[in-house]
Image 1: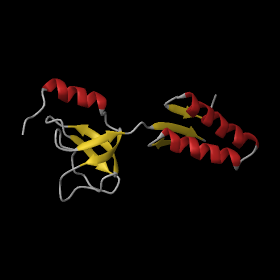
Image 2: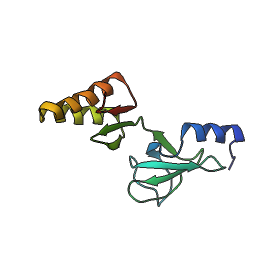
Image 3: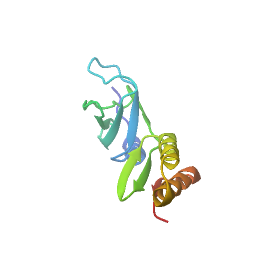
Length: 129
């Protein structure tokens, strides 16, 4: 196996910081989580492998040059002081649009505030102005 250069490992560490969310696209291992499993990056080792805590409890690494995990475009919402990380902006948009439809008054205002920020492309969307 050819290991990546130090520059590539450093680029991977910048691209996949701890806390990043990924979805598994390819892993050729009998113990691999199912394709499509999502997980959270805990780090990148010196061989360029992504260290992942998979949502199904698996801890198998994504081996550089062998396996493939796609980074998710996550968004964070903060509502009533509680932060939630969404694996896709569209999931968050759909949730808050439904919440707007089922709420009224100040609660609705909170949800509209977050919804508007989601549509504007912010990565952290709060119910506060």
